[in-house]
Length: 214
Image (cartoon, rainbow, N blue to C red; front, top):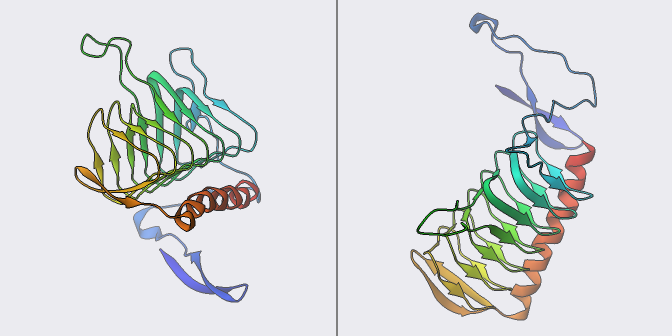
């Protein structure tokens, strides 16, 4: 439950008292303290996630196992990066937004050695996107709810529209907008659009600093 209040000149939200009739109680927390991160970033099968300097992982996200997060990367609420059966690499300044799922393919007869998930620097991964055992080169934007399947290679300066599906094994040449399920090449991005891909990554670097200091 929330009530509107005026905070610093704009409308914000304030948590109301919990309904005691439901047996809810509030647990006081010291100002400036944060919940335990033991369940947010955790080891698996002897592998501990590697977090470079400036990384932000929200307390409700999960980063597990063979995962390396580059400098100033950010992982937002309810995102899951699960490196339990292969490795996941997330490049510097890349943001993994709310509810996104990143996973890999294990070693089995159809895929000897399995497949990792490799994401370059300055990539924006939109809310609820799913990336599975693929490769995304630097300075790309993966739209909200897009799905990128095993063995896909997304070359640099690519924009994947919201809700698109990239089927297994497809290679997307650099510098285009892709849209649909299955996704089709729509047109080449212009310089302004490519600049926006860089801006999006830089914006999330600035944004996560505020969250780290909150």
